[in-house]
Structures are given as C-alpha cells and as structure tokens.
Image: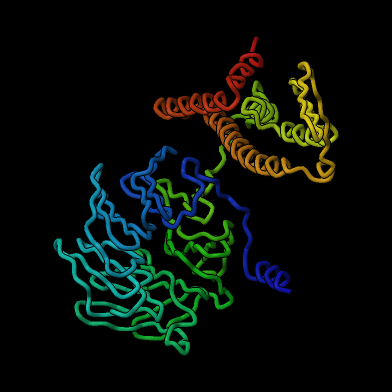
Length: 464
C-alpha cells in the first residue's frame, strides 16, 4: 500500500526528470555531509576528512581520527573554520591550529562579518575580536542552523526559529510540542540569500516553510512532506532542495516541483560554472555537463579497443596472488581421500623375549628386524578435524579475493574513464599531464596485482 501511495504521490505532484548527475572521482567512497566553494576550490566534508579539490584533483587537508567532524565555513579571505564534535580548528594554507575547545557537543559553525558562531547542543558560542563567550540566550537549546540578514542572526533549533539582534531574542516559528516540550517536527536548515531579501526559507522534517517576522509561517507546497536538509537558490524563481528522497527544484512562480534524483542528499552548492554539486550518503555528485553535438560520439567499443578484458585481469590476479577458489576446492577433495588411507607406522629394532620359571629366568635377544603397523580412524569418513582449518582459511581467502577484485574493478574502469577524457582536444596541457600520470599510476597498480601481466598483455594487443 505504501508503495502505491508513493507512486501516485510522485506522479501527481512532481514533474519527473531523468537523473543528470555523475559521481565525482577522487573523493573517497564516503558519506559527504557538506560541500562549499571558495577561491576556485571545492571543499567536501565527510565525518572524518576535509577534502579540497580543483579540476578533479583532490587532496585531504584535514583528517580526524579521534572525533567526528561536524561542519565548516569559509571567511572572506578563504580561510577555513572547521568544527569537530568538541572543538574548532583554523586552517590557512599549510597552517592548522585549534582555536576553541567546547564543553558541549558542537552541531554547526558559521562566519559573518568577522564573527564566528558555534552552535552546540546547549546553546551558542561567539568569537569576536579573538575572544570567545557563550551567549546568554538559548542556553538550553539544541542549535541546528544559522543564517544572516543585515545585523540579524536567524537561529534554528529543535523547538523553533529565533531572531537574535543585539541583546534581544524573538521567536518567529514554533513547532507542535510533545509532552517533553520538544517539537514533533523541527527545522534542519534556515536559509536566506541575496535573491529573496524579504523572505526566510525554513527546511524541516515535514517540508519547507516561508517565514515572516510578524505573521504566521506559510508552508510551501503543503503536499510536500519530505525532510529538507539544505536549500539553495540559483536565481529569484528557482530553489533547489536536498531531501531524504532526493533533489528537488521548486519553481516559486508556478509552485511546482522538478525531481532530479539522488536519494539521501545532505547538502547542495554550485560550482564556478553554475553546475549543481550534491553531497550524499554515497559520495559527491555533480550535475552533468551539457553534451556537445560537434564531432562524433565515442563508443565504449572504441575505449575498450586494445585493452584486456576485466575477466582476464581477474583470472591472472587470482592466479598471481594464489587465491583462486580452485585451491580451496582441491584441499577439500584431498581431505576426503585422506580418510580412506590408513596410518602406517614403520620401525626397525630388536625383538626381546623373556622366559621365566620357578627355578630360573632366561632373556632371549633376537636380531634387528623391521616392523610395520596399520590403523584406520573410521570417524574421519564422516567428519575430519582438518575441515575446521579449511573453513577458516576459506573465509579469509574469500574476503581477500573480494578486496582484490574490488580494487581491480575500480582501477580498471577508472583507467577507461581517463582514456576517454584524454580524447578531449580541449584539455589544457597541465590537465592532460595530470591525467597521463594518473593513467600510468593505475597501470602500475594493475601490474602489481597481476605480476606485470597487464602491461605485457597491453603490448600484445596493441602490436601493429
């Protein structure tokens, strides 16, 4: 029944669109919780790594092993303020230093006009002119989001939305309260921008609202009840929403939705070309570039020409690393035959006999001769204790085989993608050099897995 409802819901209320996003390579297969752009770079945050990328070249600029990372922001000079669960770090070029230790768990961090706002599970900390202090307002609130308009600070908490202006506090949105005075539905993100100077957008776990300072909030598209994690505007008429069901584009004039795909999207931003970037639980994705009609299309057959098949590489990797499944099967077969063979003991010694009567005792020592004894353990025909050893070895070998084959798959198909990119005549010399170096690096890795077979096979296939 739920499936039928969702089907009708999507078809009646949403204008569908084919998914037009591609996975951004170079970022680990990880849950990306936030992305931002600045100074020509893209910054992507996972729960333990902050990545910095440009032209598909990515590097880790901060790695946390002790505690999870929660949020980050950029100042006007491109410096980074990075929040972990218990502190704030300042990153500038190659300099990294911790500038704040929080007594409460941190949720969010934001920068505005030289001030740093840190939202925790028990209030807000403010850094101004190098000094930190805790604000007297909202000391028992779980802070979820900040936004700014002129001198006003908009704060979203689990109990609603507030405006902080100088020392005053005003509540402009309140959710339906449960017995514990905690909202049944609550905000995830509060958003203001240059395109909508008189409007405040609020993403909640039950849809999106338009907030006003002096009158009741208005729900945008009442039928829309998904959890809105992020809101971004590209122009005055169009908003992009990151939700648990995917990315949506709202036309504020026509009041309709365009569904763009990518479930479990957590954050959105735009790159320097205006293309949408999406942080999801499965990595970082980017809106596809529009296809150019000039020139002939490159087919998969063209890219695979002169390349050994993936199956061929699999077989030689298994053989070279001695983890072929046939090895374990051979052990099991030999173990079954082993139960049919007896245990044989062979000895070479003297025979000694003792004769004894009431009157005398006589010992006879014979010459050295050979002796042989044969025995069977009949239980081995049903169960052999060595099978436990084989089961353990089999599980370990299987896991190793899966890891190796997965690495080979990633390397093999990344190599094909780079080959395709190198066919682009518009690549700059610097970009082409980077891709050629990466191609050689991947080839060397595949050689390491196959004992040099990959390069050898390439030469054979590409002989003129």
